[in-house]
Amino acid sequence: MARMHTRRRGSSDSDKPVADEPPEWSDVDADAVEDRVVELAEQGHSPSEIGLKLRDEGVTGTPVPDVKLATGKKVTEILDENDADPDLPEDLRNLMERAVRLREHMDENPQDAQNKRALQNTQSKVRRLVDYYRGDELDAGFSYSYETAKELLDE
Image (cartoon, rainbow, N blue to C red; front, side):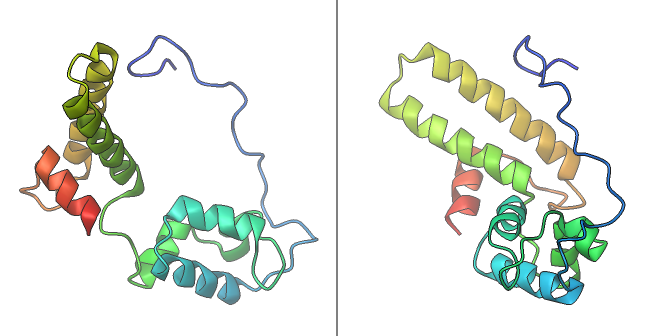
């Protein structure tokens, strides 16, 4: 499938290998993994950063190749159960950070047409994601603006 704002296509064969159980060299305790996930979330890490840290550092020195295989739950499900989930979905937060960065750049460089288009594309993606999450993850009356994004990201 083609990308949204370019004519390029994504990388092929980028799917994870199919596995039903964790590898035999990974003998981590599911409760220890869940505790570490909650601990990392309380330190302010996003769900994808938590997965990378568990893959690289592991739990008590043993790497965790896949949290879902080790615990039977995704990182976000573990965070939901323990009331440690972030206030904004990660994809929306990342897009808002990009939009704020681009907006600040445009304030300093008003003639930068290429970044003006990038800002428009990013804001379009943010609005679509806000529509998708409105009512479930976000309040029913939430609407995106630069000021609200700035406030949410400064918290």
